[in-house]
Length: 409
Image (tube, rainbow, N blue to C red; front, side, top):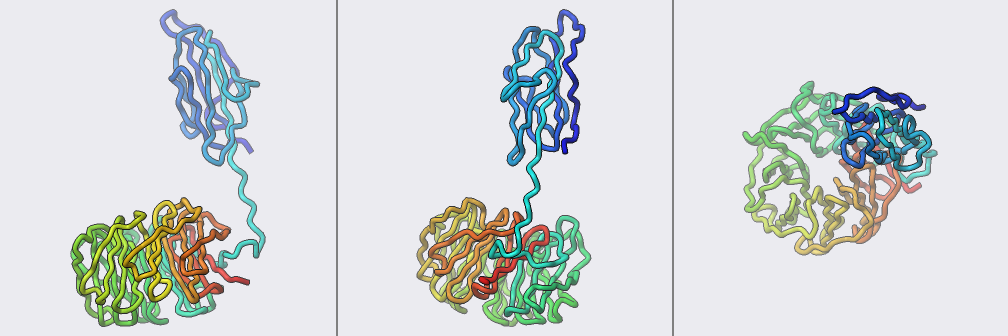
């Protein structure tokens, strides 16, 4: 139903002084959004602004153009432009008023169950979920960042995501936390974020230990657990830390040329690992004692994962996907139709992989990342995290409390 926004009166004439030209006033009605501009210039306003007006020399013919916002439609003109199709020409021999009507897009019809490989799991979760991880087909954790009025919260499931329990990690609503998640066993996990801060639990989230790994104000952004003892954490400005005792102690690792945020970390073995940042890829063959770097053939990169012992895939901005078959020594571009930013990638058994990103995009690969196809989802939320066990057990999480589950049947 159309709602009036701004004014739109029938054409009126008013007496004007000899020095002032007539005024053209543009108003808006309708539930949609759009803008109106004029030639000659003078009118340039949007529906969200309400009305606008401009004065022109008497006798000027002013052409008005209506442009709907993306997804919205222009319905038509009223007032001095009544009956006009497309652009409207108004001759200003007196004050005139014009009204433009825009309509909003119809709400999408919810898809029937089973129409997508990915289905939204029934939860009462709200807010931005950043990461998800499953230990097996039943036991999983997800973390919500404390943003958009929500508190940092851990969600846990023991039935594959059919139901989720929620436990607030902290009542702090200001410190930006929950950028990553690592689950070592049903009791032990890590998350963290702003001010170089790491949070850890050893009782399934009932209590959390808070530790600053450094004095920097930069964020911790990524984590990778090789096993229960050896864990790597990366952050803004090239921050990199490692532990070899399950998090009891941490050592800062300095890597030459690593200056930008460490967006993703992946290890194929305790010796061979990769880091990705905005423009470069860093590789180690000696467990992180030394790192070599190279420019990425596509950038910026947001995440990286190993599909097997030698095959790695990194994803990034504007649908970027690059792939290595030699443990990250060399890389090639994987061509897809994706143009939307990809935020996360993960692989499970038999080379099955999932990449997720903005506006609900999900790409899947069945050949260790050599080729990718888009799969439909019932959401348009940013999907920031993905976790894959196999083609029958994969999850993606994102904004607006989104938790998606994929099953081949």
